[in-house]
Amino acid sequence: MKKILCSALVCFVAFSATFAQTKNSANSKTEQEVLVAVDSVLQALVKRDAAVLEQALTADFYTVYDNGQVGDRKLLIDSFQVTTSGWDAFERLKSTVKFAGNGAVALCETKAKRHSPAGIHDLHWQTTVALVKEGGQWRVAAAHFTLIKPPAPRAAQ
Amino acid sequence: MKQLLFVSLICLLTVSAFAQPSAKGVQQEFSTRTEQYYAAFGKLDPVAMREYFAPDPDLDFFDIAPMKFAGWAAYEKALQRILGKYETLTIKPNEDLKATRRGDIAWVTTTFHLDGKRKDNKPSVMDGRHTAIWENRAGKWLIVHEHWSLPTP
Image (cartoon, rainbow over all chains, first blue to last red; front, side, top):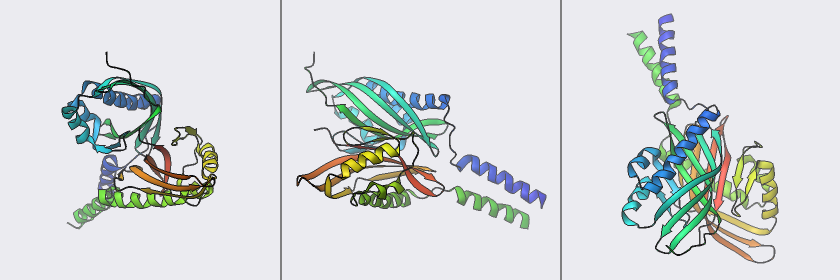
């Protein structure tokens, strides 16, 4: 009987470790890891780095863009091939990280510089980023950017 | 042999206990939950919406303005002011709604259509974007953050 109980306990612990969804302790080290994951996505957007985005976004990443269109990871990465518009810089300002279940939500103010055929835009966003930890790495699962101030396009130089 | 079967059974039960619901099940569950939450706006009473929110004072909510509210109490006060302007209000998620769950956290991303009539007789019709983060707390799913916005013109 002892043997059975012991085996069952080992099974329970093993599967718990694999599948259980535990609340992360919201310490500053974990918060930093979350923000590093956010930054890696922002910098990959500037560099149009598909390989980094493949790793930094979850396979089921989903977002709603500021034009009201929705899109997944593939659409985002494929867009690098079809558009000449792009990001020149991202700066993450005030940021907080909240932990929920086994995930995290980063709330950030973000400044960005974007170029498009219409010109160069300085953008100021209010941002929600949902992240989950997969394979020991925080990955961005969803994001929502809202302009705090409407962009004032200026002519490309 | 009996012992082996017993241990296998325990293992199977353990795996089942931690198994994630299917993506389709999550989609269905949170589509319904979102529709119910949106329908609560139609009651024009923030009190009716309390059941959907975690009451923590340190949570942040982003409304359409875009304004940031710290904690449900502040958000409820803002909702009271906003909903007080309406005679009728209907919000419906569009078909692009996507719900994803990992354990005790779930997030719903969707566009929505809002159709309302204000007390000053002005119509209020808009299409917008919504992201909601839900957390399972003791078996009850509560919104711990949400972000409403309008598409950039």
